[in-house]
Image 1 (cartoon, rainbow over the protein chains, first blue to last red):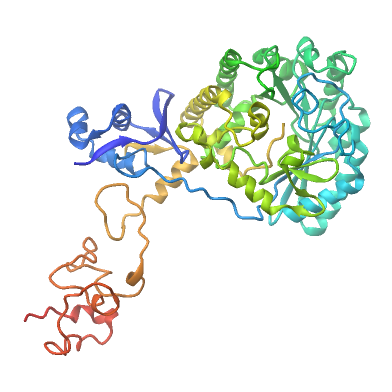
Image 2: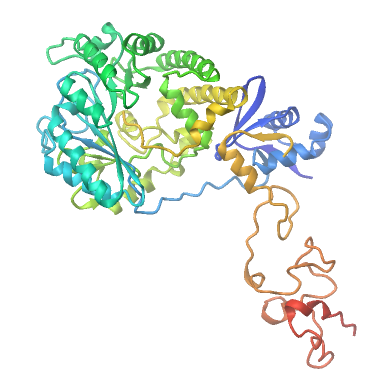
Length: 477
Length: 109
């Protein structure tokens, strides 16, 4: 007698219908009443066919359907193997983050680069404070070499404060365009800036050159001025707000987004969102909790994550209603997750760092990502000598989801895969550690996104079709 | 599938990947996994393509006799007629196995 049991899954409801998110395949199915009843019954404990029939009537076709997609299985069947497959080298480089300077004209107290949790000594370290033109050119050559057969390469300029090295940025764009043309590729440019140094010539240049811009800003004046301060402690809101408005007015070639850092003292997500979209005029706003060790005053505790989730849920609900009506809503966090849900992404690694994304330090050292740029412990080569394949392979071996025992029982692992390496490094001193301090938040947020996804699949499936296009370069924050 | 509706792209792919209606070496129970042939099944061996009834449900199952190919290249202690002494003409009507394998008939002692 066959005994059936439920396999890993997460059940959710949307538009009055039951759905299931399967783990680790990341497939989403809508269930009919019979399938829902069988799955729920088997989720309590395994049942034999006779027990199921006695409880629910004829279930054979339902059981066959559920078994076919691996939502249920015979209890004695071995668990699904998730083979530890390390991507073959050379893995094509999609996004290169160029840290054109490690200096900044702001002194944001929570900064991971300069604050108490910093990895690299940017003051007295061996790295030059500004990337030279030559290193930037070598980086471009490196990127085009490593892009493999990808037709488009993405370059993100980062810092420090990126615009402190605007002259090199400008020349790099020209050089990259020229070199890309020679090898028959396209290059897409973007940058992140705190907006303090924006001026008409720069704005003009960014607009004319189709450079994507992300502004780091935390919200209304009193929020922004709490952490995002100059060396002398003065807030930066009054400096940046008019410059951003000027940028938004002139730069119409690409949608411009804001990137907000949330801290224990700065949690009013909805109010920040309103201010940045309605008062300032950003096309979209993305939020990220501050990366810090748990002892800092601005670290977000458990209650903070709960509060963040309830506010994210509120914005997600608003996003849903806008999207059903085919109206734009600028809450970018949910859009990224919906795209991954739509594609059924099931990750072996939390992000592209060390794979399709690499960070380049001011001296041309290549690191996992921009947050590790300049760190010897996280170095994966140099732009001159190329990627150190042994180091890269060792990194991927060590950070595969199969190594993260903590994650092996979590239904949200196809999307989270243990979370940010840099966050883990700051929290636990180990990039391979799963970010256990925000598991509840991740599961809660994934559940919200699944709900929105299910609603959209019923109420406006055409909206989801926009995610059928191919994945673009990774976002950098 | 009647009870599940694929919603995201991965679900569609799973539905497509599991929708093959013929699975070699039918197995009882679920899930149906693809069958990867090995060994002698990679070459034409009469008896692999169809079972004794002409169907595919009982391929390579021991029946009244073993399969023609079993006594040549296989480890299987094949129960086939003794071609040296008792039935030297057992395969005489089988000029080409691909075409004539059904002519290799049962031999009774």
